[in-house]
View 1: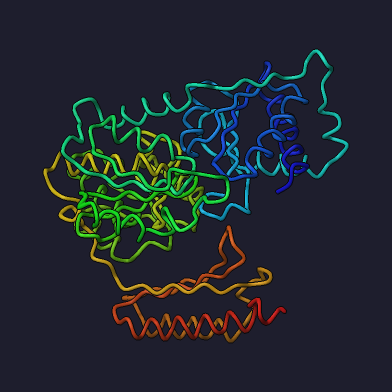
View 2: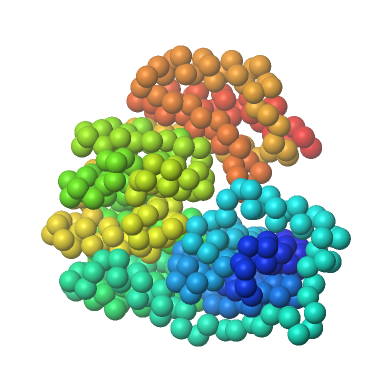
Length: 437
């Protein structure tokens, strides 16, 4: 991700917007706190302005906040500059449409095609009098705060609760402590001193033991660990036990079903979600629909089926009654609100009995089709036969890293660990980084 690429992406997006807007388009740009964000923000804005698009700059703000503001401010597109949970060395760009949802695959393909078409990009330049303007939005955090508080209602108060929140030195470093404080909680803040290079470094959702230790030290009621761009969260109850996305979906899915607010009596999750989630929901008469890995797949299935709760085990949860994309702060608010309204602790609300699950990651040099290796296919088939209906095997490539994931689930820990190791070793022999080198 270079300034040159960011500039091209801005111009390509502008071209697409000018084709459909029917007027002078407006785009909103936000980012997380990593060092390269300043450079890339300027480059994307220059690309957009050079092609006749006005730009609104909101600075560091969680990804879901940018999605919300894109729709709220009637912009034609939203641009997020972030590499989410990755280290500061990485960065990326994602786009939202005017409705606050991520762009569909066909529009993204059109943008990618333009980036690689120098002649088409040159044609997007406008006359000097038509160059776009860039404005700084000074009240972006305040707008997002008002939205989040509206999701739990005026009657809900966190008075008497002590909450530890770890913002991962990322995009939520301002909004998260302020939000929880305004709702009445006593807040202990971690990861709120970004310097451009410490995002996700030993803190946040990637390192939840940091917030866990602080929770125990401060005898807090709940811990909240966000990732660098604030779209996912892991929670910690008062005893120091973790709540991931599966726990949240089990707890709130059953709660919403009881309240009659779970549309279609269905929750959407990916193939990575624990089998215990399926069991917990089934006990309450709730159906689980599984998708491929990735929040776009979850969101797509939710919209197609008109469902309102879905997410990933990683803590990326989508509540379509409130938001268009995963929102770590919104998830934390809804879980804490459930605590307040029920008069029970987070631990007492737990609804998931987890099936043992083993996950191995194998570094790879390239993503060759895994189905082309007979020895790997035989190992997977053998594992599936051994586990039967009480277990699962999943082998796939990561969408964000050059690794292959091997997940095995079953009742006996020693059995699934042995099976996972065998399969991971086969993956390593066939496509592993060490083999390629």
